[in-house]
Length: 504
Length: 127
Image 1 (cartoon, each protein chain N blue to C red):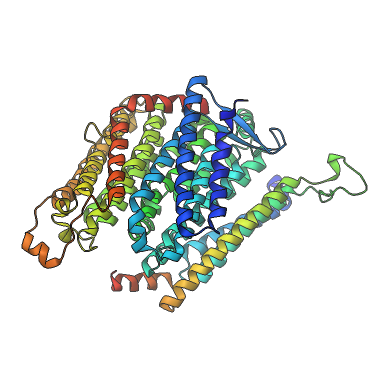
Image 2: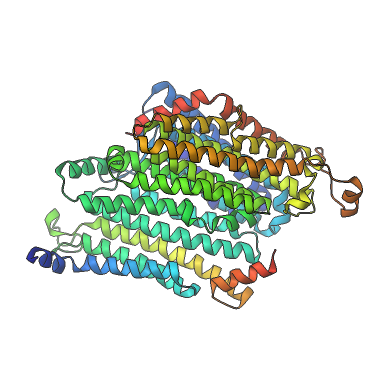
């Protein structure tokens, strides 16, 4: 066994222990430990990714001293390593971008709790990415939910507590369904490890016994995880939770937490049930319809919204719809497009949240469109960041959003079910136009010059790069990441294809 | 029909678990009162544990604790569902504690347990 194969285990355990240690550390050291651990996890994941690309295939890592059918396992392939790498980069950038703002938003005594929660969030995300055991996945889903809830409510006002309660209720409904599904799957197959379950499931489906319980199980797990990742009819908690929490929390929640659940769902599709059985059941058609509804509904709600943070949150609903629509196409190409969209959305949405806070800060903290007039001049770097993010979301070439849109369109046209071609392409076009309406409206708004006398009268601050070097640097890194995803998409898409092949 | 009847009686535990799951789920989703929601959550989780325990139990076998040196597999029930139930209980206790603490926070601020009313007041405050 090569030493690099320890990386998945090390990254999970390091982030978890740093959370535990942070509880007794003073605020400043907790902050440094958190930054160091996220950087280290990112670097190790990059190392693992390069190793896996060189060697090819995937490996399993035995946890504890019991071999396969009894013990617990970790599994890593190229796709998992890529996910861990991008997630840790985005988490690091989100935290750096909101660091200065965190001092205003959260009391200083609670800062180390904030870092404990982010450490736990990272460890649970990594565990969801790497685990090969369904019940472990359930436990980490709950840890993820609890830490995300903490990240919402750490900023104490009525709005965030209410949002946290609503988030918890929806999440608990989802995890209840997921737990029931996992228990039924265990009863049907007698295993908890993903690869063993898959063998039994294939045997059961070949024999034709237990067809109905198996369909119910698939339904429970899929519905549970899509409730947790805020698919269209279950998104009521989302705008409040993302709109009023601290900016780093909003960036991490929108870009990472929901994506962790979606990635687990992909793993269950490929590695637990088997993608052929999923395609033969009608569950993908259900996801397809709800995905299309989400794409339209999320964008329409975003257009009505008059608050910049809530607008970006509603845009998340639409983007989650894109991902599920890609699942619903039922082809390999659709899945690749969805996975790329996960990465693209994570990179872009966190940039939008971080830039939006820069814009509202130079408008006396107001988030309404009328007051944001001219804020792109008052805070130039945030204006540029917001513009890049908007163009990427709309799907302008050079940026990441364009690549994922073109992948979706190609997947739709190459689809072997002709019923799905026209709805997909038409809804994709409508949704792109709606995206353009609300994002470009905002971009134009922030670049309409405001009367200097009025600005002085309102006492608007002007952003000085010398005083917020870290913030400027973060935005530049975000822009670079977006350009990398947009212009060097070929190798990334290739890694995703290899990873999905390794899954099945 | 006779077969259905026989299955119905022998799987009565699982059926009760499913009905309880439905009751808990509906309570968590539709109740306005936060405390009743939390009670619904607990009913839902307990029903899953009942389901697991019922599935893991084999008629006429002992609890999986080795006594008198008997190590034959056929003497004992399957220990894994019991382990899963224990893990699940830990998770649901922590989640319940978190929900209750959030409820206390909201009650101290707004003096009501009705989530819709809290939302209405938040809109009026208009933060």
